[in-house]
Amino acid sequence: MFTGLVQKLVPVYAVEPDGPGVRLVLAQMPGVAVGDSVAINGCCLTAVAVADDRVTFEAGEETLRCTNLGELQAGAEVNIELALQVGDPLGGHYVSGHVDEVGVIDQRIDDAEWSTIWVKTSEKLTRQMASKASIAIDGVSLTLVDVEPNRFSIALIPHTLSVTTLGQRQIGDRVNLETDILAKYVERQLEWKTGG
Image (cartoon, rainbow, N blue to C red; front, side):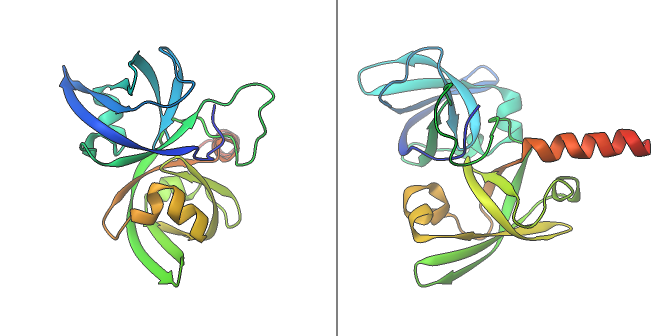
């Protein structure tokens, strides 16, 4: 479990083919050991090897299909968050690290050091969204501004733009999306109640 508060931007050293998946080799993160869960651009992966200056993760075929991790190349940066531990402060919202869908940046409106970004996604996902509710984009906990049938907007402050990958995102870029876990349960209960 995570909070959506990115702790660090980390460079990708290598993306190595490994069977139907890949091995992601990132710069070392203090406190990460083999077996630890880490959210990489919002996708929960397990550390499989730790060296002095590098940590390696395995991403399988399903992960590559359902996230933007398969698009990473050496030199890119990724958002990193270590797993939440009992007693840690919860400053964002509950994020599972299970990406629901990949959205596409549809519009970006920059106003000095601030930005409003519109993201295209499916109606299936926007049914789990509401204005002023939470969403995780590339692992970043954000507040929804407007929600339309096939897209939504978020407002980004200068700090978020400078300490996460979202500052680098442009129109056409693909981003990992995870809706609020509570919205999933509410939608499921409504489907059950209405026979849908």
